[in-house]
Image 1 (cartoon, rainbow, N blue to C red):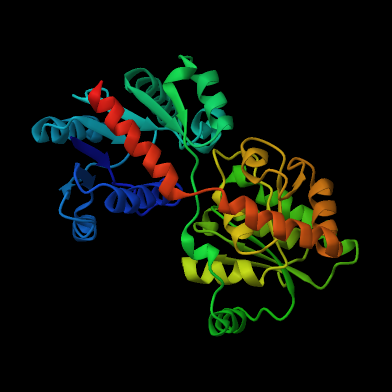
Image 2 (cartoon, rainbow, N blue to C red):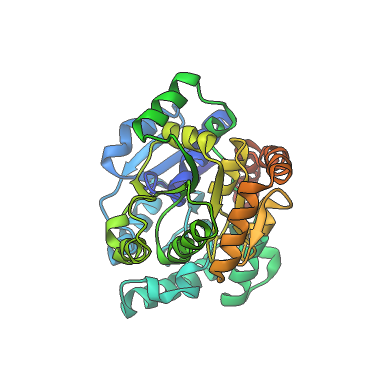
Amino acid sequence: MRVAIDARKINDFGVGTYIRNLLHWLSRLDKETEYLLICRRSDCERLEALGPNFRPLPNRSKNYSIAEQLSVPFHLMRAGVDVFHAPHYVLPALTPCRAIVTIHDCIHLMFPEYLPGRLAHLYARTAYWVATNRAARVLTVSESSKRDILEYCPMSPDRVDVIYNAIDNRFNETPAPEQLTSVRERYQLHHRFLLYSGNVKPHKNLERLIDAFARLRQQGSDDVKLLISGSEISRYATLRRAVHRYNLHKHVRFLGFLSTDTLAALYHLADAFVFPSLYEGFGLPPLEAMASGTPVLTSNVSSLPEVVGDAALLIDPHDPESIADGMQQILSDTALRERLIGLGRIRASRFSWESSVRRVLATYRRVSAS
């Protein structure tokens, strides 16, 4: 069997995490299948190291471009591929073999205002339609995302398989004491603090989080800081304005991108993890925090209740007062904190990349055989 995987987004957040773990576990589980990895030339050496049955195919076309609609099928046709896996919703219409597509969420259909313009929205709508009509199997990462996909792209539910994501194993390990001390000193964390980690796009709801944090301090918790980790913060000036509106510039800190090791240490040091997102296809950060032994507060919408189960405190993300009350509760109620920490570790342990990738591999074989 010869399988091609589009790995051009391997360095991204979200989809990149999915691709990295997919390839890592395929390299451990399957030594027989020939894997052809469509990638950036700069990633070729890294991908060759996966094993002798992994071969990179350099591709220069940009994601979400017309060029990829031609160059990717050309690679597949020339290589004689049996099955092609598109790890996000763009599946070229001219794909010359049987295909599998992973659709993580429907955010570009549900929140078109986040796209750069009407042309991008049209491209997204067309890409979703092609993916769901052209693929032999559609994979997604939660039952919530499956419902969204079926709502926007009507098709037989039997064609959609839910295969959960999981977390990096490093979040299951307690950082060394010297690592914790180093991170504490580097960021001067000599106080209680709440942590948010993820990207900072509008649906992450960080403006309301800052509103809620201001309420929390007004209610008497004025010794608590808020740390926000995420790339491209400079693109969203509204967050800075929200901080200055409440005169919180000494109490809210934007940390930018963090390495996995630094983030793991921050999870362990934080008094609570807050994640009031309006929409998630899956939502890895709450699970990462749970595995780290950090109590979690998150939203009662989209896939988040499905992922966290009863191991997190759920709030209404549209209501800053609900978010503030949740933060106050999780900071002040010791019994609640201990319960969430215990349940969180158990919950996070139920998600495994190995078992998820085994199911993806079985799908490759089933589609190839059919």
